[in-house]
Amino acid sequence: MPPHKRSQVRGPAVRDELVMAADELFTAKGAGNVGVDEIAATSGIAKSTLYRWFPTKDDLVVAYLRRRDAAFWQVWDTIAADHAGRPADELIAQLEWIRDYIAMPEFRGCPFLNITAEFADAGHRARTAAQINKVELRRRLTTLAEQLGITDPPALADQLVLVVDGAFATSQVFGADGPQNHLVEAGRALISVHLGATQNG
Image: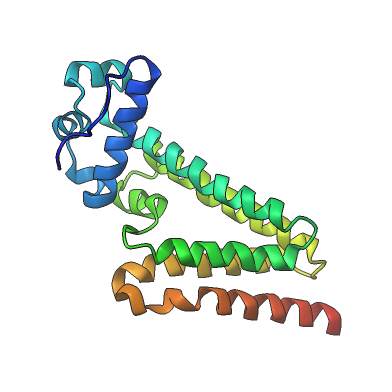
């Protein structure tokens, strides 16, 4: 992969360039298959400078995950604002954008699930950084489920987490025609079941 075409950068912009290069490489090859030399070459930034910002590759992995986490919630928050006060509509809209995100040609699997699979040590800080995203997803889905007024919001939230992460994972196995295309329909069915159980209970 050729170095970035970029103007001279200094200060925090150097850090951003390094994280962007790491993002590209980790997404394409997996974090474990990318070395510091390749990140430096791709970014066009000297390895000595890289080490000043990121003393270890693990530091870069965590920064990459934080960047992905922020981008994920930025989209989520925009959709939430567009559907404020309508939790059922918001839930479907959130599932729709995740489905569309998975369908993007450059999608190479959920970065948080990928990193969790790559790092065997459950206490590794890269896995902790990945877990933060999934815990927040579960929390936000639980909040939306509570707003629906159903009997068992945590159950619906957990079922939706399974559906979302299943869509992330199966897309890498089956390709463009995989089960992930039914993410929204599965979500609708789960919401309908919980709403029906609440009304009939």
